[in-house]
Image (tube, rainbow, N blue to C red; front, side):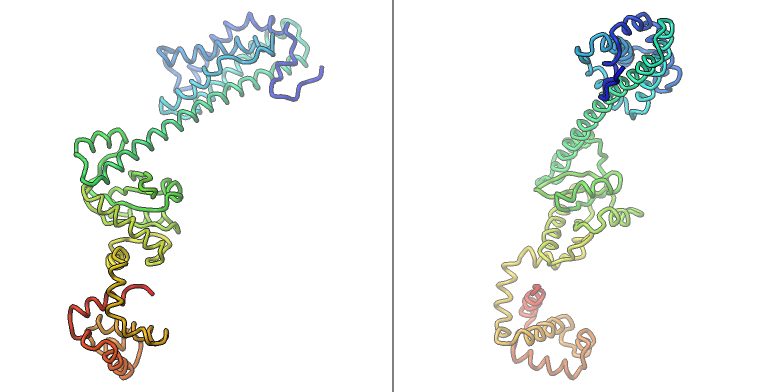
Amino acid sequence: MIKNLDSEPWRDLQPAVADTLEPELKAATGEILETIGREVPEYARPLEGNFGRGIRTGVGEALSQFVALIRDPEAGRVGREVYVELGRGELRQGRTLDSLQAAYRIGARVAWRHFARAGRRAKLDAEVLSLLAEAIFAYIDELSADSVEGFAEAQAETEDRRRRRQQELAALLLRDPPADPADLRVTAAAAEWKLPRRVAALACAATDLMQIAHRVPVGSLVAELDETGCVLLADPDGPGRAAEIENAVAAVPVAIGPTGEPGALRESWDLAKTCLLAARAGRLPSVGLVRAEDHLAELLLFEAGALAGRIAIKRLTSFEALTDKAQKRMRETALAYVRHQGNSVEMATALHLHPQTVRYRIARLRELLGDQLDDPDARFELEIALRIPQ
């Protein structure tokens, strides 16, 4: 006998083998159900309702169909949705596939014992019995694969539904004006997310969101909004949370807004997004976690870039005639002047220069800027102009 090398070894069995096995179907089905109930703890209960019907149908049809395939391999398998649905049912019950896979192994073992006994009574030779064993276990593998497919499908559907509900909740939490509290409670319950007392918004590139989503602290809400990755972090300032967040984002560019009550989330989200944009533009650190609260002045200048540019034109026109090197020197001197209120000693320390050198620079600065250095409003605008990155 030449054995098929495909995945359907039952094709090499003679149809008469089906007649030998058929009388064993009822007894094999009963023993399989009894053994599953005894050896698989999760199934150790009366086979009632949809659960019981599914198991009984699955076992009965599996054995009948196996015999039918031996009798007529060209008929092909039918009813695979029974085993797909068994896989889906395991996910709905909150179980892994371990129990169902154990049930399949029991089914193969008990069926082989019954079929081998029938084969010996019919005096089937050893090669046929060997092929019959191979066919049984290959067939059970196909049923198991159907259940794995069903479990994966149900898992994907559950994840998709959870993602949609989280998306709806995130959009509601970040709505301006704020959403009705009753709507928030209902939507949060549907998303299985407990509204925290303190929360902050984290922004990242949409392409980095999934990488971060699996590592952020438990209780975070993940969504994609405004083509940007959004993570709402519950109690981000709690014990150990800062380290968790830092570890989750690693080297991915991420910005986090200030922490506050859920009603203030929109402001946190807006600041986080602005912070992320500023980092991408090179105005803030572009690696790892950037906290908006630590860069409010830079964000103000970034957001009001055009207006700050006009101020720079107004206040720093006299620098334009200088060489690039001289401009850089005068800019850093002027910024030190407004920061230290013209104190030459403090300026020298900050600039790492000799006080006499600083006094010389101040004199030159007065030639260029004149009365601006003595006018509080002018000094304020001057500092804005000098803080704009070059």
